[in-house]
Amino acid sequence: MTQLNFQGPFEVAGSGLMTFIRYLGDFFLFVRSYFLWNFRPPWRWALTFKQMEFIGIYSLPIIVLTATFSGMVFGLQIGYAFRAFNAESMVGSTVGLALTREIGPVFASLMVAARAGSAMAAEIGSMKVTEQLDAMSTMAVNPIQYLVVPRVTAGVLVVPLLSIVYIAVGILGAYVVSIYMLHIPDVYFIQKLEYYVDPSDVMGGVVKAAVFGFLLALISCYCGYRTEGGAEGVGRSTTKAVVVSSVTILVTDYFLTSWILEFF
Amino acid sequence: MIQLINIRKSFNGNQVLKGVNLHIPKGKVTVILGPSGCGKSVLMKHMIGLLVPDEGRVQVDGVDIHRLDDARLNKFRKKFGMLFQSAALFDSLTVGENVAFPLVEHASFSKRAIDDRVQECLALVGLQNIVHKMPSELSGGMRKRVGLARAIALQPEIILYDEPTTGLDPLMTDAINHLIIDTQKKLSVTSVVISHDIEGTFEVAHKVAVLHEGVIVAEGSSRDITGSSHPFVQKFLSKRS
Ligand SMILES: Nc1ncnc2c1ncn2[C@@H]1O[C@H](COP(=O)(O)OP(=O)(O)O)[C@@H](O)[C@H]1O
Ligand SMILES: [Mg+2]
Image 1 (cartoon, protein in one colour):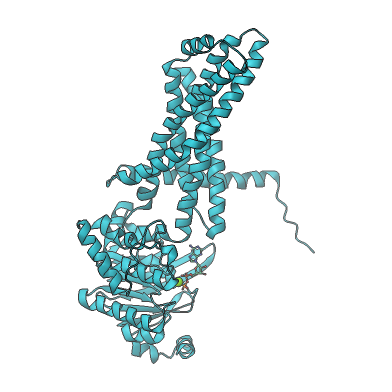
Image 2: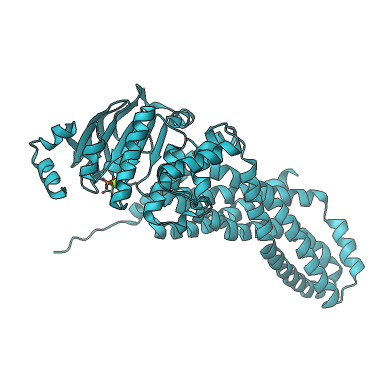
């Protein structure tokens, strides 16, 4: 006779919740030791610059490419929609606000998560499964300090810059579409953009991008750091890094935005 | 001196170490023998605090290493050098940078002195002209020897060797065994060697311990082990030599 292993919905939900809580606890321990090692010498400038280069310079092409097209399509959609109300003059300000406040920081971060976050998880993960992290520890070098701290610092510094690039290029894309395809007079586009988009909007976007950069680097490093089970495990960690960072960016975005809108 | 006191360790319900007691004398070579998969590497990782025992204590020079916090343990590890079974070279660094790693991190040497020391260590393990190669370009035996060069670079007080001669040809095996004895003699290093090479073991060891089914079943001098009446030890020795 076969033994039926019956699990009620509450048991399933309960064990899922327990796993989630265990993960969260483990992640917070990781974050704690990140902060401890972040403030201990030696300061690893060279490694940090290398990571800034890796995240920043090498992400530029994909940032410029995606920014151009998302700016263009956004300009196009808004242009057609606003034409119905004879409000084409507002395309510049609408696109500008949306890009600086939301699309720029969020999309730039998502692109970095996909490109650099996955690489961080794969690199640290393969070091984990081949005992390179253990070897580093035995040589009295803490892997969190050597590998994680430079990547997170680089994420915090570089993602805001990339999101500024995203915003600028996206606005340029929308501008080109508005002028050459929708034939909106360019004075309107620029005038309204200048009028409605304040430095505080850019500031808000940049702060968000810094938070996203911090989170995506930390999460990706964490996924790499906890890799188990050979090459297959490295693949799993890489996927997990991208999925979890992306979801976290979008969820955090909502809360950060509501906070920024309320207090600034 | 390393003292292992009643070490127990399980992984997901699979108990690998079932109460290991072992004394590792200072300034001597101690060899740990045992079939593969019996937990020799796991045992060695306890000695340097990479693994934390479920039960029991590890004392190095009288200090309980699992009581140390992160930062203290990190400092404490400067006493150690360790060769991993898999060599565990950093694959993003060249051979030279790998061997230089502990020197760059912990010694206040000039760049020249570091380069010299790297060359010296690589020569000791019989490797030349490979400083600029990447680990992925090397054979398994060469990687092992680079790992060995890296482990001895800082001239630590305690060196842990996890299967230093596995995968090497007989001549190289001899050379590495001599290197282990020489480093021990010159600097009176405390050495722990995991090995399958029984002949070589009895040549280098001041003390031999046999690990089987999670406990030490025999320990003592080479002669004590060959004379051991424990059935597993007799079987193990007769099959191998
Ligand atoms: N990190 C780990 N997680 C789970 N099991 C492990 C881990 N490390 C070792 N083991 C298990 O412990 C046992 C002993 O492994 P090991 O010490 O590597 O053997 P050996 O004596 O050949 O060096 C093996 O069954 C291995 O699967
Ligand atoms: Mg082993």
